[in-house]
Length: 125
Image (spheres, rainbow, N blue to C red):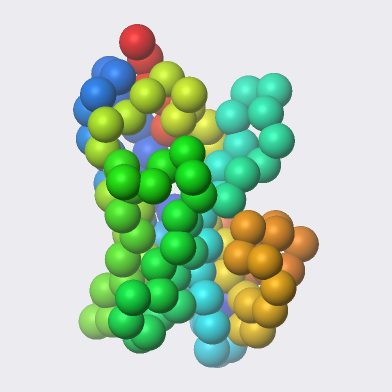
């Protein structure tokens, strides 16, 4: 079993920055960690994925590429999502998800077995 805990969600002004963190614990070895988000009346969207310990493994959704950065901190076993140039359309509940296999499309939520509770990000104009 894997336990994922997100933190860092907040309310910010458009153009601002925010950093989310996902702390992972448990006995199962995680192969990848992905951030998803779901905004009001929107479909769930893959934001970014990283393979812990693998250089240059980060991938991003087209709507956040160039503005968001995902990274892995080995010592603390956390995955961070640094968000800059935030827009009102970034408003969503952000979820940290993980799996021990990670086959298939990285932005397919169905391949992930482990989910955090989510952290709310609200961007006002």
